[in-house]
Each structure stands twice: as C-alpha cells, then as structure tokens.
Length: 161
Image (cartoon, rainbow, N blue to C red; front, side, top):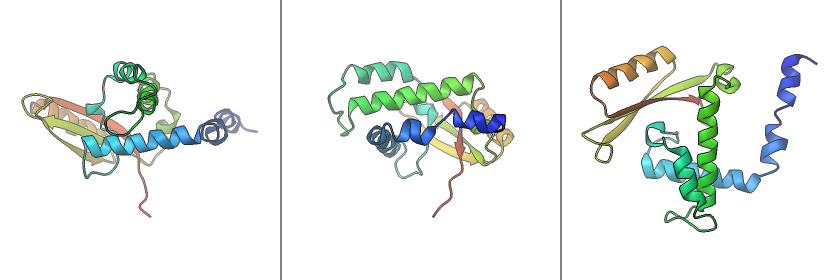
C-alpha cells in the first residue's frame, strides 16, 4: 500500500461518520437547506460565510436550548451540530490542514459581500469564480469600494443531473 492509500484508509468517511450518524447527518443537511432559504432565498445552496462568523457563540446559544425546536422547525441540537462543523471546518482551513480543498482541482470560490450602511439593512450578493486570484481581486475591489462585509468561501463544483 502507498502512503496516500494508507492515509485515506485512516479517514473512513462513510463507515466512520455516515454509517454512525445517518439521521444526524441528514438533519444537519436539512439545516443547511433551511438556513440557505432563510439567508439567501432563491439561490443555489451555498455557505455564505459573511453571515456566519460567530460559530462558537451561536453553537453554545443553541446548545443551551438542546431538546427543543427553534422557530423554523429545526432542533436546536441540529443547529449546535451545524455550528460545531462550521467552526471545525474553519479551524482546519486556517491551520492549512485541508487536504480536501488542497487536492481537489474542481473547486470554486464564492465572494460574498454586503452593501449598505449596516449589516442589518445591507443588500447581500455573491460572485462565483474558478480562479482564486479572480476571487481575491473581486474581494479587494469590494473592500475598496466600501462594502461593509466581504468574504471568500471555497466550494466544490457540483454537476447538475
């Protein structure tokens, strides 16, 4: 076996996560859908990181209401799990440990930004780029033009069926 093969075997995503927690993963996926409809109605499912920055605080707020359902019909425990995954993903990326993105050539970059006087009244929009440099150029332009918030997210291209 190669080192790469051995390394992949140490990350059993299907048998070590999906088979352990199928209902929980399904609930978190639905939470992503509901959140996208709430924060980005009518857009393709994506994680708008400009609207998601206080993962640890939000996670604990939802954890304090574990066992109950939020006003949108999602269990607070589901939202706790979503926020924990979001915080972990960001931490892995910040530490430069994201093999998934580093080794996947079919990634895209989404630049989200808000225009307005404050976050509450801002108009949010996004642009999608195949090139990291194009995304960085857009980000710098948005910040330079007085956007009140801007963020770059990495995603994996999906294929429409």
